[in-house]
Length: 476
Image (cartoon, rainbow, N blue to C red; front, side):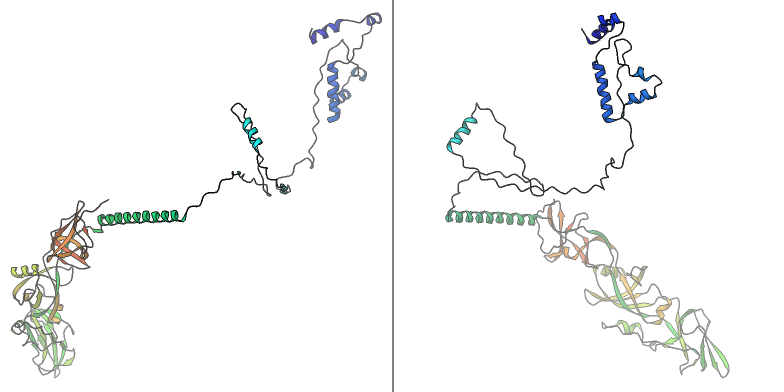
């Protein structure tokens, strides 16, 4: 019979004494009442009892509230009391981590030194062998606690090595043989490395240079003497001269007044007969500066004399010369020496030369009047100047550049060119082979060499050709 069945059977039954008197019998305390009593005691120990407070506030009479439980009436299950909430006090709040005092490191006491383990006897070895036989169960090895240092850090465990027998000493003769063998092996390795390095260096790709396209034009500076037709302009009267344009050269037309001579209170105008350049200066070589005296001979050309300028508002000398008139139009002639090359020799044979007043300036084509070869490398040339600016009349000398025809080719360093059997040549890389190529050309400016023929574009050449040879090279 269950618990609830027992309760229900006892609720309706009455004892004989209760039936005679008519009163209800008070039952002893049940487990439920005991549980309620235990909870009430726990509430008394921990917090205030809520049933007492509830009875005090209840409007019911106190006698009815204290009536013990009987079999009749409604059974009320006990309720768990709730602890009263009280405010936190400063003592209950844990301190912040920053306010906590730093804990002092624990110092471990030094471990006592353990006595050395006794040597195992024969009986102990036999017993251990019997326990570790094939039929014996394996026992777990005891785990040794890690040894810690004074600071509390674990120390590495050292395994006890068994006693090893002493190694026999190697005789000195054997050591000497080993040493000699090591030396022989090292010498053989060095010898093989030397052979490999020499072979690698022989087949290694030397420094190369890629030829650059270049247009070569030979420019030879020359110093020439100029010849032109001129006339000295004189005054009909003596006196003080007043120049029309001052002390400089200028262009005049026919019958223009170039100066006025003041004599006895009167002024006399000086006019030019034709168009040309008027220069109020004399050099005194009008009669000796001729083609016949300058062309003959192979000596050095004479120097041009200095000019004597006619000063403005100054008296005239006995010759009463006011200046010189260089008539226009005319082509002055130039006489000079020229160093011959193949291109210049061919240009002289054609009868024309190309000249420039300055490098990279405009080109002028001059007609060669006559030339004389004094050797295969030198000639005396007379040509007509294709230009005659006004600044040329101030001196009978002129400097200009004689240019050859443009020639296209390739440009390589001077060190890449060598001489074999009296001819120029370079070492050209064709595939993986170095091949000697005979070339024609000439050295140019900035340590470069112009190759006009014999070298194909697109193939590099060796930079240092003095010690080069035809061989196979390793490209990679």
